[in-house]
Amino acid sequence: MLNGINPCAFAVMMFATYLLLGMRILKFLSFLNEFPVVAKCVYLLAAIGTLVLAFLSLCDAYKAKQGKVKEISGLLSQDWHEIMHTVVTE
Image 1 (cartoon, rainbow, N blue to C red):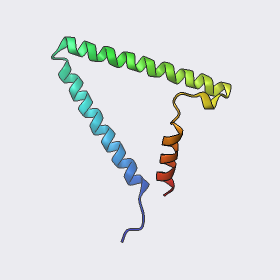
Image 2: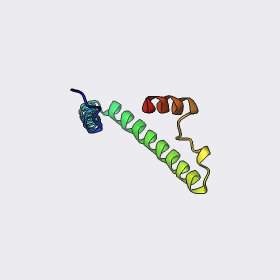
Image 3: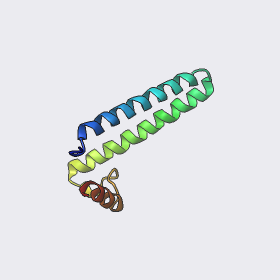
Image 4: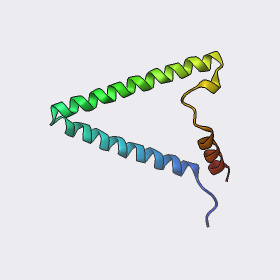
């Protein structure tokens, strides 16, 4: 008989999914080493993307420290917020 949904099972499934996804990405990146020009382009794009996200995160942290929480760019839109609230509460 089903007593309810076990949140630990969801946590394990998410962990396994991210682990397998990370392993596949690592395998893909090691495959890229056979093509040095493509590998350098991918690594450069990844580095630029990481720096952009780090900068945005620091800007959001600065705004949060000033108390300007409504101005944080990393927040979900109101539509997505309502959708997620509906899914979680039902």
